[in-house]
Image (cartoon, rainbow, N blue to C red; front, side, top):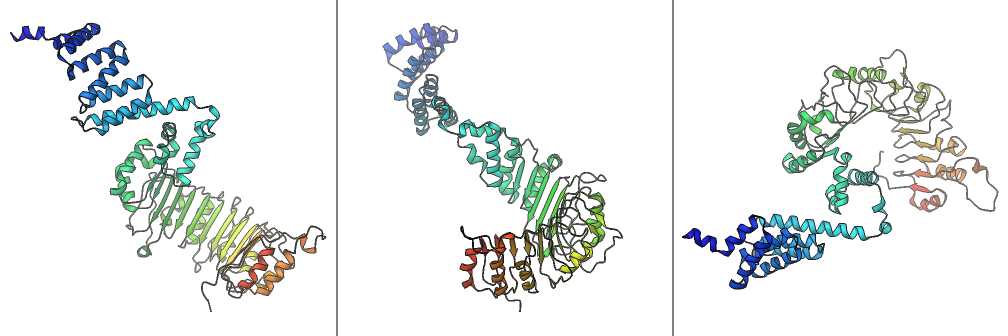
Length: 530
């Protein structure tokens, strides 16, 4: 008897017609039922679905709109109404319907995800529609090619610390550019403990396809967590590594990688005397390393110096290196261009012949009197020394008469050089922190030595104000439009004068100096070395 009643039930008959593809017949059955019995949820929903299948979208929307009025707690009506309005290109209405559905307390919480997706689709469609209607010349940035726009984003993220998420949230086009730029995802910063950054790092690794090329670790715990999870797969892709730890690190710490550049900075009072190994995946082959920078950390050079081949930059600050380790590295790296080291001043040189570094352009060396005499540097242009003697430097420098453009003599006990003069090609000269007074050199420059000099640094010295006044009067005479050029015009004018920490210089002289020299740097004395 129940089967007979089901066959006579219009709702079941309408469902059967709908399932068999007879949508028009189903609409007729349900319409008659609604007219006789009044609208119910199942009836209106079935008829609206049939209208959708026939493509009569406006009729379908009216049924869903009625469903929303009668049953405001059902999310499905909001969802389908929003989707229909999206197809009808009524984007504002589609957004309003989806938002209204999200604000209502529906009986099915899972509907929120579907409504959010519908809202996103409507927002994107409205943006695309408005963008298409704008003239091409509306904004300059809209005309930029993807590769240039991607390069701008890369600079913003890596050099100006702009969060990548902020760029991706601007619009869908920018989001796609960021996602499609593999170079954006190559640098990875580990700046906190692994617990705090693990979620962000996992998302970053997924977007980079685990091919991070630039690793910047500021937390040992964060680095350890990353290495345990990804190190075995990703470390071989690393091209650049930067460590900057502030906490104590284990004595046996190392990371297996073979980067092109490696920077390791540490400020660790508990790590004095420790030498850290630099271990790589290649056990016997030379390192790929081209640039090595160490600051405040000492690595065990004795185990690796024979594998450092063809370096282009070696920088060691805050720790000393011995000649027995440095010279083999230099002999294996004749194309090195930048060398920054502090030597052990108690050590005797071991080289019997000079080491030719034909591409070395910049040399920064401390306590290296015994090293200068072992090098030949024909391309050297920038030389900065610390705790060394001026006359001995130029006596041992080879070849003679180097066309240096920049020379710095810091914290020197003696700056006398009676038998020769400074290179005439110098444009920058520094006596910063010298214990001896540089007055004689200032007077020699005023008299015409170093005619191309434009930058002079006498900070933290006891230079006398009288010789500084004579220098500026000689090198930077008053400029007038009618007067004939003075004898000082044969020299380059001083453009930058650093007087910071000069105890004998009085601030009342500053206005006059600044009328003659473009940049005059002055700060009060920081300490008294007497």
